[in-house]
Length: 270
Image 1 (cartoon, helix red, strand yellow):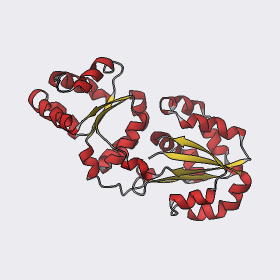
Image 2: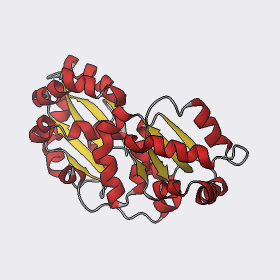
Image 3: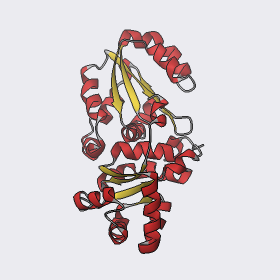
Image 4: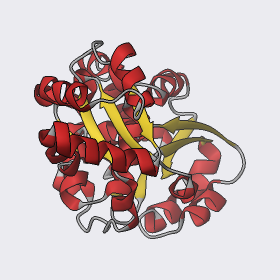
């Protein structure tokens, strides 16, 4: 789930502020967008970007974001005369440098807000759920260690909750590379691993291998590999495998069909 920051002219924001405050938590996405209207500038934040932003103390204390995996919402409102905590957070050098590896929309938001302080209000609303109907595939997703260090609390919570659909969205947004498998080749990967590298089966079933387990995972994949049966994996091993000590997420789409949604709001759980 991604999040969109809608930057709205101050006069429009002040017209709808009272209704927004009352309805931010429970209104549908379409109702909020109808309130916002058509005169806005929109910036998209990837799945990890809004999470790290919404969990900063200055942001949570000042704005009280409404964010819940179970309800599939990510919302926040900041009035034109109350942008300072958000702007100051985005411009903190230590956070700016720390977030560099996952930054996409945050950079646009950082440069947009100071120029508009006092002139706009900011309203954050989650994206629509069309992404959940996209055709998916079995995958192994590789996450750079510095990215995993930022996002591991969110990734591990989603694994613990069995919310594999949201996990796939978060990891796909921020992985460096991925290996896609057809259903037949995914089942073949499991069968080949049983015979040649049974420890890889445990990693697949455990969903997540952190960077410290990467060398062991890499050795297992090389040991079980038949390049004729798994050409995508063979190509990834030759081109990408030595670039970093990655965290690996094993995406089995059969889990997503049966996934139960989280019941604990993510802000309370991190």
